[in-house]
Image (tube, rainbow, N blue to C red; front, top):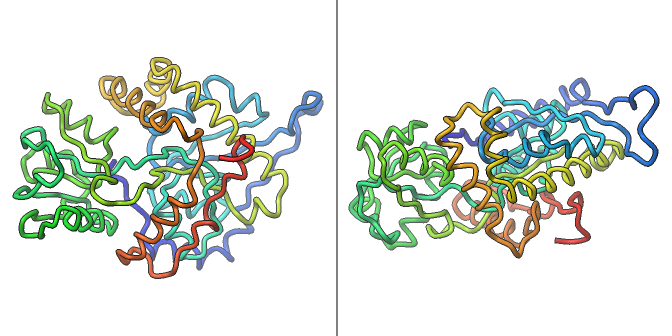
Length: 349
């Protein structure tokens, strides 16, 4: 989705500022409204949620829950904010400048290395969206037929890791599959013929945009087919220290997650309704949303053996090990410290 992933030095700078800024940035839970909460209701709370990007199909569960009153039923007032940079959300939660954030599993490991007190409390998109997207002009039916074709990527370290994992999986050399950084104009790089394929785009965004622009379906190979371990593309992140020290915050987070899960489940059953809601909040073209929102919801529902929002500790450990093996992080990752299912509305996942 042309998103700038957080670099290690950015998170290290954020961690260094943590002690100075955290106290002045703490968001407190407001008092109950006049007359108090309804009998038996949880205390009222307001939560700011920093999105990872502008409103888009990945956020269908959030906006469906907001529109249909799922947050209100949990006595929550929720404000979604668009970040000025995709590097901001995880940092803002760590600095208590936002109550919750939408971020990426890879960034959770970068954040751990930088010492940010952040923990993933639910999977928002529990499958990889990144992968290899091939131009409709290239007749390719299997991954390793990419030999002889060029690949463009944004230039962030994780894209290079995906590229080299692809080469290793197919026993190909960089000479056989030349790669080049094209910045964040990934779609334009395909449309102009500058490259034959891209890494860094999402199957539910760039692949659809390319297909619509070229009136022919682009071929998409998910990250797992490239040899990258399965991971959660997007996660909901809370401040780990506040969860441990502030019971009101922990309660509000748990209720937010319950409402998000309910809203996401309802959206998956009503893709037309979810599309209509996203058309009111998103800057994307209606023709794109009409394809992308239902497709995204099908991706969320694809693994019927996994409950909505659940994360796999084993999968996180595997992805963390892959990141270290590719020198994306240098510390030994501790997946159990940066993800938890404790706030999901299930006894267990």
